[in-house]
Length: 496
Ligand SMILES: Cc1cc2nc3c(=O)[nH]c(=O)nc-3n(C[C@H](O)[C@H](O)[C@H](O)COP(=O)(O)OP(=O)(O)OC[C@H]3O[C@@H](n4cnc5c(N)ncnc54)[C@H](O)[C@@H]3O)c2cc1C
View 1 (cartoon, rainbow, N blue to C red):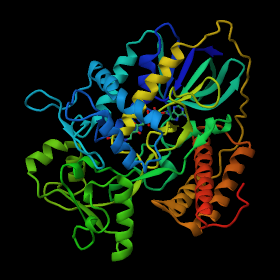
View 2: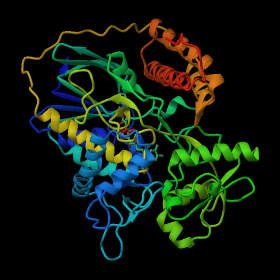
View 3: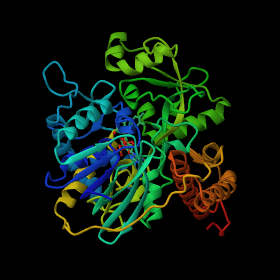
């Protein structure tokens, strides 16, 4: 058994920031299940929100905007931490070499996004996440105490006395690892939907592992649907047209190429994401058409090309010129506000288990995340997790005995299960719950989950991810049914 003090599962913003904060005296392993940069962090376009050296802004204003977007369901303690510690983590990023765009006078260019009352989003053109991941990965690779394994899939994690044992599949070979503290930074759940902006890693693995270890999971049905994904319904991974495009003045148009947001919210196109997504669905019902567009052609073409180089060139490849054309958009799954419930040091309800980033629920987002607050959450709370672990007791004698048993002759899982789960979720719980589809969807997902749990299937990536997808779909729909029942939309009480 390979022994580490701390194992971090996930190498996005959260996992990397945790590794960079852990004491160099600790022996640390970081794993990710795909290529090093395959994660949601790498896709982040808009930027990272935070008040850093801006006298005209304040953490209190940032907190206010976060609460308004979150429907005032935000946790006041963790939200205070988020907005007040933003300066620490933005400064750290700059020290790790992250190159945020600057104005001619040398000050940082801070952009505006929906729901923010001030310009406070630090960005690197429209590819901020990639810049952060590249620079943090380079810094982690220099750490002598940290081993990094890519294409290494966590297949199972068990709580044992004094720590955890983990079953990791790399190069078609299983190895058993142990650690005293484990940090889950496994990202979101987007792949439980047919249409999502999320990377292919977003199958909810960490949430399912934590749930099966008995950790408390909270608000898994608090899912954000981004209003402006490029509407190319032929691909599962939808290309995002960043909030910042609306922040820079883009209009949203209906099927008649008319602006419509004034009918739904006085903040118009700069209303928070949930409001804009809901408005699109209501407008689609009113007009009887799913055709919607984003249009920024009234702005200077050179400004658009310089400000959104990645979005501009990707759309051009798809046949749309952002400087001239109205571009088709529609909402799609984008972000998970809920997750593994943690305290302000990112500790879960299982002793020694931490969770950070999109797989966690810190409560900072309330029922709807304010744009660009998620990279910030990932960085602030993973740093805090690592600072907490640095102060904990480590037992030199920790040496658990555990054996994972695999039947290499077992059959692969039946085909089509993941497709069924995605179709159910798309129908039952997309932007707004479809009350008639919730209960039958839940029953079917429960059946799939039980099949995967009971059956003796070959343990591989397909199995681990399908089981995780079934588990998160089960929790989401169960919670959605409970909410609908409270609102007297569903009367069945036999949901187990
Ligand atoms: C298109 C897009 C644009 C976005 N834009 C912004 C933005 O502008 N600003 C902002 O704040 N947020 C943005 N977000 C959200 C933000 O990027 C994410 O919430 C955040 O980066 C999540 O970071 P993370 O470290 O928690 O997860 P991720 O970056 O997704 O990393 C998850 C890691 O877990 C690993 N993993 C998962 N399961 C396993 C397993 N079983 N075994 C081993 N490893 C595993 C993966 O391999 C990966 O390394 C955007 C998201 C998307 C999809």
